[in-house]
Image 1 (spheres, one colour):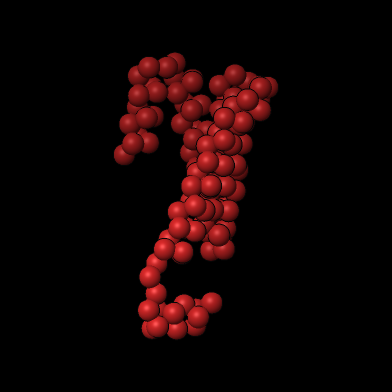
Image 2 (cartoon, rainbow, N blue to C red):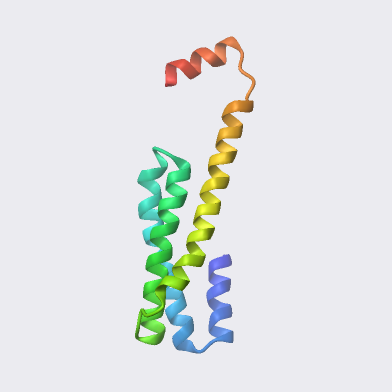
Length: 118
């Protein structure tokens, strides 16, 4: 719903070509994000957040610039800002996961289940 609202707002406030470039780039970036996230999340949630964020940021930036301006020049600046967000999100996920693993009280039965699962 929020994505649809963002696309609609883009078409209301920006030129149709910029709004279309934004919508297409976002959609492709999210598809790549999902394709990278899903397999990585089975191993490490933090790695999945970081890897998918990087892949999605690169695709989104390159596609948007190419469609909107006919050139992918200056893509590095666009990607750099998005990479900082991906790194911060991955660090937060790792910290929360670590905190949850260390702060859970464990009784004997839970410890037995944890050992059996690892």
